[in-house]
Every structure is written in structure tokens, then in C-alpha cells.
Image (cartoon, rainbow, N blue to C red; front, side, top):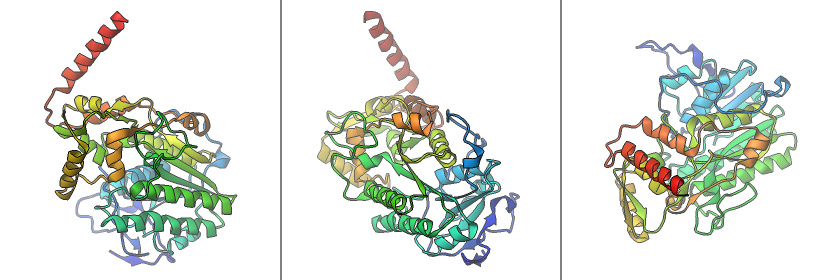
Length: 407
């Protein structure tokens, strides 16, 4: 692998890579620090659609970005968003940045996009932004998995310090006009005192003190500070509901696919989900549209944890909170899962978001409801089921029909 500095010719077209077996050509990189671990993208045979969901009127060509930089490009969301933007004829250049190289399949999907192997924690990321005259930055590289990034300390450094360096580069650049941040609904926390739906103006009843939720809260604050220091830079923050879909494997999906799923006595949390295609479409919309502000992004409706377990063909194993926490800790030590304390609270209390602003101001409507997104995910999995999901659905349909007749 040939190493190049960030100040030189620091990009390589993903479309130049040969796809034949035994191709000796490797990925050239801009060495800007020690690589940090990134998530794996799950390959898919189907091409990425150009547009998913209803995104309102077409964006005025004069307001479209010219050069877009996407961080976290070797992961699922970053890679597929890069592929979408590279297919847009009015965008001159798309630069994909990550500390680890993408898979060959992901490089192929990126098409004409340029890939830069760079660690955003290093100040040299500013050279990439300046030399390419980037006008739009889409920050997607925040990680919620401590073990995959080398522990909690390494995860916080990548999430917070990396974001600070990237935003500092944007502040110093005269060409940057727009910054889009992918945040998370975990910023609202999960507790018994939560409202039915959180609006963007609300905050967590118990502010997060650590973990991924705390990182999201800090990075959101830094992003807003950038907007105040540089009023000419439009900042957009998308708080995404937990993403689920046939091409993406998450801690939540692995938890729900267990044959025997541990739950808490007396708790049946509401889960608002987001299909992976809708997540990509929302980020694409935010990149192309001339809108700014903070937006909740989630599908219509919610699904109860008990309902999700039944539809997946699993069986609940109710237990007291202490036993649930002990079992969770044991599973984590054995490598069965990697969810943090804030994700643990989500499995106890759940979380719902009001998405009115997403529809009225961002101009985006998800294609899948929460239940449709979950069912689409289930259709792609052939896990051994303790209970036949089709039998559960037929029984639910009969109960609903009977209740309608008696109403």
C-alpha cells in the first residue's frame, strides 16, 4: 500500500479500482494519524436506489453542494450515502474519508467518489478540506460500540476529539458553507419520566453523563457553536431513531433475534425505528436541501418490545432488573453483545420522537413505518424461531378483527 501525505495528491478515485480477482492494485491513503476502527458495511447485491421516501420539491440547482466530504465512509451509512451522492450529476466531487479502507464491494459502489484514508482526530484533516475546497461536510463517523473502537476511552476520543478537529477545520476554511451531523435519539435518554414523544426543543429528563449519548450531546453543542462563530455556515443536525433493515446488523437487531429474549418484569418499552433506506434518504435530503436546524428523524408509529419479540419468533424471559443487569454483563463479557448503559435503558423504557419538523421543514417523509421496517428486517433473516412468526401474525389479525366487530 502506497502512503501519501495529506498535503499532496491525497485522493484516489474509487472508480479506478479493478474488480477482477487477483487485482494487485491497492488503496492509496493519506496518512494523517493512527487508524481507528470503523464499522463493517454489509454488502448487498441490489444497487442503491437514487431516491427513497418523499423528499418534497426538487432542490434548486443553484443551492446544491459542489464538493461534499463524507466522514465514516467505510461504514454502512457513510459508504452508501457516498454512493448516493456520487450518482448525483450536479455534484462535482464527493470525497469519502475514513481511518480504515472500505471493502472492495463498497469501493465499487462509491463509483466516481474519491477515497482518502485519514484520521479526523489529526489536524491534517484541515488540509484535505482546504485543498479540495470542500463546501459541504457530512459527519457520520461517530461510533456507539466501545469494544470495536478499542474501549470507551478510544471511542470518546474518536467521537469527541475527532469532531472537534473536523469542526475546527470547517471553521478555518473559507469554502465550507454547510455542515450536516448525524446524531441519535439516545440524546433524549430513556426513563420512566419521559414524555410520550420528544420534540427537538426537549432534553433528557436525566442528562447522560457518559457513553454514546453523552458524546452525541457534546458534538451537537460543538456543531451549534460553529454556527454561532461562523453564521455563514449552515448547520443541520439529524437525530436518527435506531436504524434497522435487511442490510444492516446492529446490537438491537441481534438482541431481538435471540430465541430467548430477556426482558424486565412489568416493562414493555415502545420502540420507534428507522429503516436503513429511510436513514440514507434523510441524510441525502439534508445534504442537498438548503435547510438548517435540528430534526428528529424516525418512522411513523412504534412497536412494543413484546410485539417485536413475538413477530421475530422469540420468547420473552421476564426477570427482575438486578438479574437482567447481571445477565447483560455476563453476555457482554462473553462477547454476545456490545450495548452500553444508555442502550440498556432503551430496552427498559424505550423512546419516541415527534417528527413534525422533519416533514414540514426538512421536507422528508419516511417510506416505511416502524412496523414495516421491522418486518422488512425479519424477512431478510432466517433465524431459528421458537414460535412461528406467521402464526403469531395470524393470531394478532384475528384478535384485531374480533375487537373491531365488538367495538
